[in-house]
Image (tube, rainbow over all chains, first blue to last red):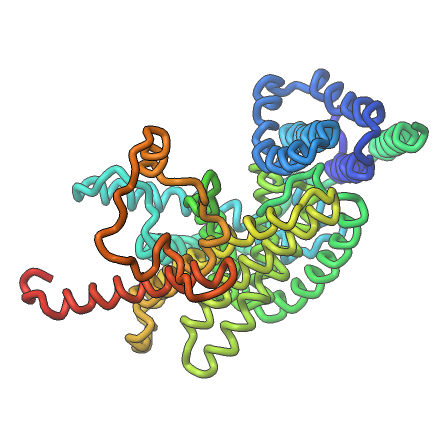
Length: 215
Length: 298
């Protein structure tokens, strides 16, 4: 079963919004809300352990806030913030594993995000690879010249990296223009909203809503 | 500074979501009108560049680190409208691909860094560029960009969960002041390098060379460091206290004992004044030594 990325994005944002509306102290409600992404994790074809570990990435920030609550003697509040952050990031992670980033960007565009913003984001993702390749080439050249095994952190190196990446990206862009690029990247598979998506959206919104506002 | 999901309350998210949405819609319109097709790669590359630069963390205090935001560099290079859109694209990709900052919290993060951060950097830069002090404007803009973004992010967290005490505010602002100063210095250095490599430096005034930025950063550290400096004894003093070894006293009376200008009142002023005086003495001595030393040894 493959849902339209727009449907997935709306459901995800609705779930995250609902989660953020839960106030500290409503522990049963939070626990029940946590069951949704955990169920999704169990039934999805994703690396479960890896995702659970990856979701802990957010913990340092949340832990800093939880620590302050803890210092003020509010242990329940601290646990609440940690759990809510963790479960939020886990939900986003599951979705980003099931739907590609480009599809999510397209879904945003179809839902009303400015086209210009999406084009810049797509170019950014494309040029991240160009930048990485240029950085690797510069690093290799520096090592061949006998430089220390250090990261490219000097401002002048950053400036050089920027100019080199810009030159390569301009060449890529010119090649794209020559091949007929007219301001937006072509879509191989057009998005199709089907009855299944409407059904899934309805069931999802009602389930989350009932769960949230009935307790 | 990237707030994750699960921290901010629904009203804060809704309010800043609306503000960010409107700002982005308007900025996209303005940016699209002012950007030719040939400049789109520039936005993409700059975005990728700032994205990569944000991944390099540097220590700013005890157990804390900061990273470049890049708002000032973006605003100075491509203008505020396109910079707002590029920074928003960076934040979107970070949230979607790297889970750095929440997806729902994107509303707040975009407002903090892509709207407020960019305009806070752009306004001083534009104002001072007109009077021929582009680099000073860039430095101030970069600092302001970090500080204002951080203050708003802290305020959002505080409004949402109410756990921020006054002491914590002071501590965080101290750390962000240091981050801001470093951001300013890196931004100016990167800007200078880009200008030089593109061959359009136009003879920048020598007064704004790197040493002045370092000196400025040092002054800022002295003035704000008081807030987050540890009051615990250093290792040697600790050892003395533990072993009961008594200090035999100074051979002559110190001008500013314990790094404090005792004649001044208050908590911050005596320490900051002493730090500043010490800094000036060291700077003066260094300049003197540099002048007196034979050329070959410099």
